[in-house]
Length: 411
Picture: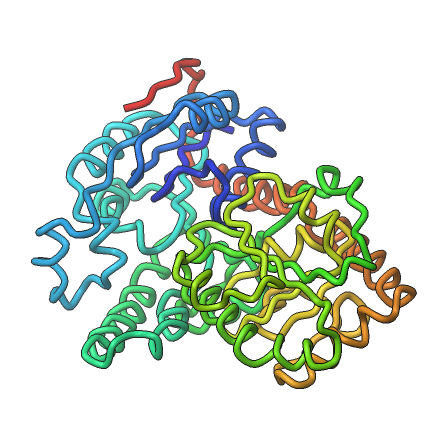
């Protein structure tokens, strides 16, 4: 199939779950022989590392710059009632719209748009030409906006509430337009179905199980591991809750327990605020396997959530027992007590951690169950097959693809 795939960010380096998802789905579909043109609007320039990672997977790579977040246009457009803020920041882009229209002059088997917030530059061209397309929605932004609401200054909270209301209107309108809609979990699919009044496909988030297969955690290390992208409010809140309420209770019973925190955009102020030597501030690690080998279990104290958690799946694939909240494993059909241990209460989480670190046999059970769960239900090959099934339905509506040019472009 000849696929036109749009993204509002470069999927390399894989500093977030969304970028990880995009990179591995591109890789899987390229390995299956599909010819992909990737149209990206990026806030960072295309560097050599991203070019080397992406170009071998693609027929063409087209990268256009996104205007700065604090652009006067974004500020002037912020009161517009029809567009939520993320649609403004990622939209109102004439160069992107024009390049997309040029690409639509070519025949495509599949047109794939990622994220409703990136849809504005493409909407009129798709409507005018009546072309079938799919839209993949990773999480409902109108719901996720609540994750950071209480963290905002009081004067910003009314605008955040207004923006969530705008986003709900935007989602209701945009999600009715595609020929096919994709969610990343059954839970998200149900929410999108309620908003759009239509059937929604599920293409699960995944993990490269072979990549993590050789990892063997260290059950006697007393080290907990958390990994997240700290540009997202849910991850910030999770660490603050863990360090203020959960870990102090753990340390009362077992003062040797350590917490390693890895991820992109780790706030520098945290090291000063929590200067306990038992907290290890690791920052972004492109390869997590060595950190996983030195850890006893994965701790995900998330209280706000959407989609499904790639980092939890990576931990399971690496054999790390997982302790989490209900929100932490939302979007995964994992069973509490079988695939992970969980609670939404800080005291109960502390007790689970303390008990599990003293039960190597139980850790081994959870490790094996997690590995099997990840491989059987969430290997990227499973997700790619689900996406291919959606693409096949689109090919029945789209004109036949043309011969590829074989050209690789960066603009």
